[in-house]
Length: 370
Image 1 (cartoon, rainbow, N blue to C red):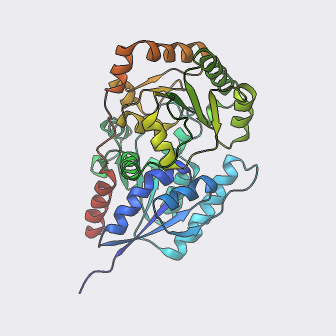
Image 2: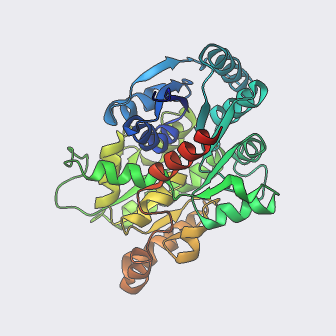
């Protein structure tokens, strides 16, 4: 008599979580031993819905946890209560979460309180500063203490976990699932892009909480100077919906002919923009992982990163948010072919695009023994 399928729940909050967990959901659905239910917390609902559509996922439940002007404490508490109620009804064999958001912290905590096994995808990232990035570093440190399976994307992440006393038998180095997602998208046909035919462009993203305010003002000032100094280049900037981001971007960049301010892209569009860009300016963690796999230099608009592997191999470079540093680094890449080539050919330290299947295989073996 065949064994009943194991029930797995995948919890998704933000757009990056949706991108990085979509390959895991697809791998579970293709297995013969497990079923999968996707639960949305509602953190980035407008940004998550297109990812759900693009990857063909089915949503079992939406917690609708977001309310206007919530504090971090309030949104975390709402997600915790919502997840706890859902787990009480569903009683899965295991739950999966990803990354470092309020969603993953609340989910791991709800699983811990109910004695339900929790798997942390992209475990072990650290800056060593609990307030940078804020609150993500604290979220992932706390999540680690409530995790049963630590799926580390790199050996560096595994080492971080070992230094914190995590049992090595609970850690697996899988690669990063974002590379799986990238490969999935680039196998499809190229969608219409907001770039102008025949023109090289620099791709820009900036949205992190710690960069709001004067840091983002500085970034926008640098982009303005670069755009005015390089009329032959376009600067394509998908602008995050955060009002603080939009205020700074519009103040400095609105009306400049070769700065294309666009709405946040669907993920396939963004992947193809990365593929077509000359170089990338970004404070995004996902971009630091994806762009090296495409041979695109990334200048990271942060002073610290929990993704040091790409910096170590030379595929990315920390430039911070001071205008002079940003402008100087871009000028070097635009004028020095050897410097550009070193970054473009440094390679990707984040895996081969099979991380999701490794995660599912580990869960299969582990749950079969339980």
